[in-house]
Amino acid sequence: DGGITQSPKYLFRKEGQNVTLSCEQNLNHDAMYWYRQDPGQGLRLIYYSQIVNDFQKGDIAEGYSVSREKKESFPLTVTSAQKNPTAFYLCASSFGGGGSGEQFFGPGTRLTVL
Amino acid sequence: KQEVTQIPAALSVPEGENLVLNCSFTDSAIYNLQWFRQDPGKGLTSLLLIQSSQREQTSGRLNASLDKSSGRSTLYIAASQPGDSATYLCAASMNYGGATNKLIFGTGTLLAVQP
Image (cartoon, rainbow over all chains, first blue to last red):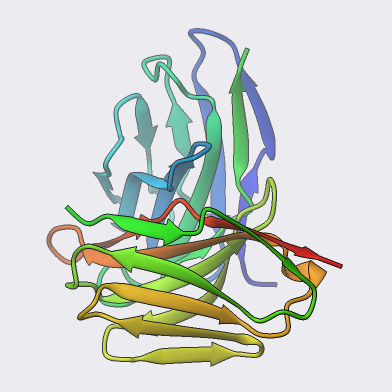
């Protein structure tokens, strides 16, 4: 089955700890994205990548880092510098970063700070 | 700055009713507009994508329209069912610099279809 997988489904972080969220896709998409969703707010873009070994900051990149070593994978690290990391994190992908490509989303990871 | 607004924030209807969800955007320079469905605690499921050159798209009981000049899109759901209960999100695709587009999301309409 083609799709986007995210793991873990639930993640708990202690103060001062870095955690990494996994995102994998087998859709052969070039572009991948990370969004954050908070109650009462629309999704906000954290980072995006149009191609392997390249990525760019989105609107709320502070306290986050990413890598894109493989086309299929785009992990997100939430660092201790992110002061309010409790949120629902969604990964998405599309055939291209530009044009009118449709974005497809994974099931999400809910991160809670203890 | 592009802003996307969805009205109403919540809607409750009896089963079988036809309904319309509204989405408005402030900048007409969009590449496309996507409608998504989100169930509680789940990811987003893409329902319909309307390209900027199109006026509407249909999939089963769903019909989405786009009027760029007025900055509006509507999602029409015919003969609603309890299984349609979810949050519906619209998102406008805008240029984000260079060759990259990004989606600007509304805050969603929470739909409850009562059996």
